[in-house]
Image 1: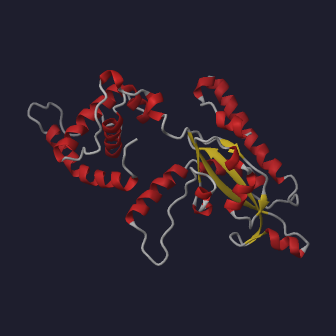
Image 2: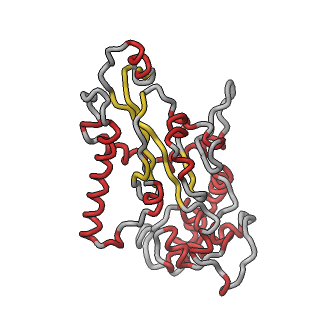
Image 3: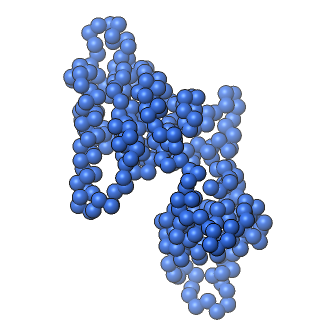
Length: 305
């Protein structure tokens, strides 16, 4: 949508920041201004988001209503942001990403703008729960997690990135099972719609080989320092994965999934799914109280379940 990767946008922001601050100082000290510096309502968007909004406008020229929707602001605020930032970019020659304006009556709406983007991102993660040591030595060896230094069961959870809802929770596996192996055996990737992007942490390196849209952070080159663009990319990727942590935390808030399992690994998956269903019931009650339109629909959840 911007024509820039994360590293390029960060470099653009670095060049833009001092010029923007200088333009703001000039605006605030202009002759005839009645308010003191610092008075008035602060900007609704950070400097970085103001730049991003303007770059999106230069690349796609969406209507102001679409910009307001994407950035959670009013149409007039989006218009003022473009008028404030664009002259700074033009004066510094930083508007090279600009594409031809299609014209006032041909600018894209929300449907046209998002048609090229994945409809949804699914974030995948796992957590482990301690279990009692099996009496059989061979079975005990298969359940011992080198990461946790104890016998565990591993649970995989996949959530929607937009609202944090759990969309898939496959059967639990012994703790030593690799996260990527568990993902492959769960069959989740085969059931995902074509326009859905699955992402995971470094435990899922290689996911792009089994799913065309699969993505993970960038791994540090062996024996070499990590490139600056990789640091920026991984930071942005980590922000995308944030929603999975509170969702996993809400599941593990139940002691049945936190304390040492005392049921000898029986019905562990059913207990995890029962806790997920209780969260879903809570969300339905919230929707009933505030109106069905207050919560987004979940077609992906229906597809996966």
